[in-house]
Image (cartoon, rainbow, N blue to C red; front, side, top):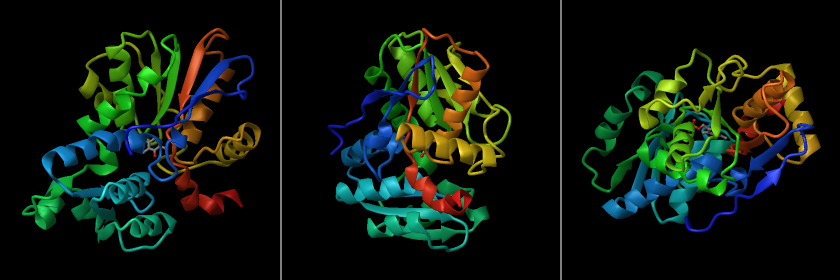
Length: 290
Ligand SMILES: *Cc1c(COP(=O)(O)O)cnc(C)c1O
């Protein structure tokens, strides 16, 4: 199942006067969404290689990573368990996880902070279990995300991606380095804070002048929105026919719109936005669209 994927590169006629293409990783799979597919690819290969048949992972109650892991495991004949941060709840995302056969273990926030300890306590003696960090973060994920670069035009001037942990961005930058491209990587963190993401990225790549981090588009933090962002999402979807999510891809598209408005780019630049998927994130934020 991890052999063939469909992720076309499409012109985006939304940012008038600029050449913007969208890399449709959201179309790879409805449940193993976008970058989560890229991140899981080599984790599943590792499980196969080392004879593990049970992925144990971590996430919040609205984690795209949990649904992706549950679906990928079900399709590959593997078991899956998730430590879910916080008190027991039910929602659409966790329903999907359960349908795919994932075992859910709700975990108080303090215990959740030490993931290796949780894994050791419950699965330390289980040689079939593989520890998969939150969001799939790690070298396997970086390797999978680096492969995106070979699917983009070599003369891409600017590449945009949204960032949570920065693992996807690290992979993209590694891919840019390996192919020796001039592409500038623009990273839009969706969590609040100063630039905590650069060190996360550079830890995999070393210093690189092609990295730009735009810290001004988190809209108050993870899963936070503003009325302007909600209006932008509605307008974008209705005028492009491409779904974007309120947590990640909308903040990236908003950042690009804002940077274009302030003349950061030239009309002859080739700009690519990576659609990392995550559309199920809409399910957790329905009330914001009333
Ligand atoms: C998980 C996710 C991200 C964040 O990826 P990182 O590698 O953690 O930075 C970005 N976009 C979408 C849609 C996601 O689901």
